[in-house]
Length: 128
Image (cartoon, rainbow, N blue to C red):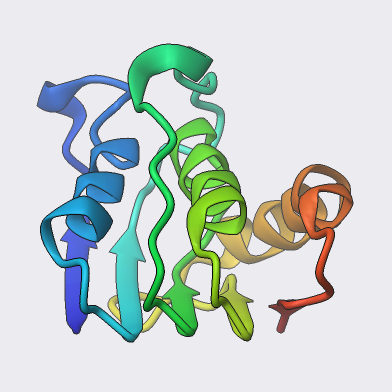
């Protein structure tokens, strides 16, 4: 499944994290590709209890492009790392496919290195 997601400020800081409900709604999903355009990269992370952890038994590969490290994106990646039981590879690409985000690329790589790499217990995370 490939989705394009543009910043939805009017839905608040939990808008991106709500994409985690896709995993619950699509239990047979094997491959997920999210193209994101999120221009706000200083967003605080949502509260931990906003989304309840539920194991997803079929997701094997996920790719997120346009990752700039805002709070919702970080929370979504951590959610996938915790809940995708069969995950083989999760690729984070700070380069936007929708629109080149110069500042977001730098912040996205730094955020992935310090906030996501420590959460990768199985060695499945790749940051481009």
